[in-house]
Length: 227
Image (cartoon, rainbow, N blue to C red):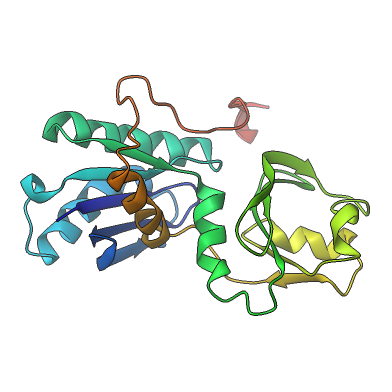
């Protein structure tokens, strides 16, 4: 038995999941602004209890490692690391965009290329590009979208764009092969499904030194009242 608790905090929608040998037992979504710091620990207690488990039953913690919100990733990672230390169990990290792509790939009936995107700022997104078989074509990187973005692929291939940054595609990419899918968010369920293989292969993180995949350094800004 491999019971894995997965934590996803890369966007304002926080989610949790528990899997047993890769089979989903329970999932919880928190769609509340700035809820990560105030609700995450309570939600973890709740999802463990509704599965009729104790924390001693959990064998690993999986974290959505980013890219995404600096604050959200920091809170999720510190919570995951604290649980790993307290319970003496391993930490598994899954790329946020990879988990999103894995989710969408199950419905990719046209065998299109797959491009998850998370909003950064202005016309910038954090993106990753996969072929129809989920083989990585472009690694995770920041992309400033313009009319030439993905032009080397889109003439020959349909591309599925999704995530909270994908709506920007419609403003600059004018091609019938650009398909924007609404409503796809990072989800702990798919983090957990990918984490099971890493658990089986013993691909664990060093809990002491693990840091989220921020992709960019955090830039603090002054509140408007101070300007």
